[in-house]
Image (cartoon, rainbow, N blue to C red):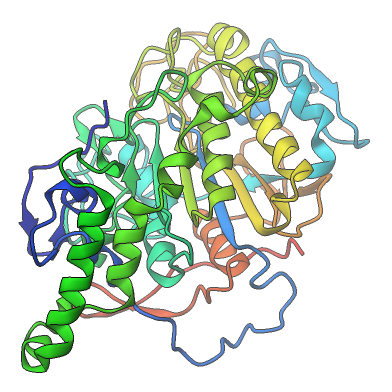
Length: 479
């Protein structure tokens, strides 16, 4: 079933997602769902970046978050000439581009290399950021957390948190169609009992939280929140909208007093979201051919990526697909967190599922022409330690396990007019640190904003009305 964390009710920072989308429960004056659509119109002066190469080349984003920290050495950046306790058990294979090699367990992505760029110099020096929640928060918000426990974990999500990138984008670039602006699936970001940190709207308010589809798309999807209750037919909901418009037009004083809830174009969008059925139809994977579904892989991850493509096709701005695992989980079952065992899980589970799903969404979107205006990013919160069996974060590691390593790792990026078949940056001989062009997580986020035509240096106001940069990073020269 669809799970939306949090209690029912309207909070000081906005209504909850369940109330925003439960159309069958709209009150006479409909003050919950429309509030979700009170986005600010972009009336700012033209950006200083207007006309710059690649600026505004993207209409939408798919963020593939490989939660748990995948090993760059054993997937993206093999080091066959390194000592055995660094290079590991896997052999490299050539790709379609001379000089670029991948792990032997990534043959499908090796065949697609001309469509994407590998950033092999992702790097940051942590300040208490060795564990997952803190690293996830920085990766997705562009800001370090204020408080980090000695274990490296954070407090639960707070209204004072810096917003995740998808929330900023859904506010700054609301979709023109009656679709969901920001969707996160198929499970929340999580480490131990800290759930959703770095994945919420924070000080923007709950109206800009993602629509959280915490289900397995490889199974039938239930969408009660996007479906009218049987006792509320479309005609009745339309009548309510017309009544609200009449009240608004005939009572200007009330309109002024309730400015935040004025009946305007956003009410129409709120009702259209439910009445049009477009958002609901985008979740219907049964409309896809079986052959294509098999190409993506009949796993949670693969079907989530196929669903992401359908949402982008429908007009959603930002889709975040989290690797369907929990940090500190069992690597033999699901988690990239390979302290206890690295090579078996990667060979038998992680690499085959990642290789099939990621290559499929890149190929499929390119063939449909969607990649021209969609930026696709695949990245985790950090990589894995070059030396096996050592502790770099206080964790216990098996002789073939790898610990957390934020000092050097790899991201994949494609689409929005960026050329493929390239390497951006380079790691040293052991994959321990960048050899050239180090890329901070903030730089990667700045590149996402830049591609969407959003100035990464623009000012935002936090919960204390203090000015902050959208992200303290510099866009990469990918175009």
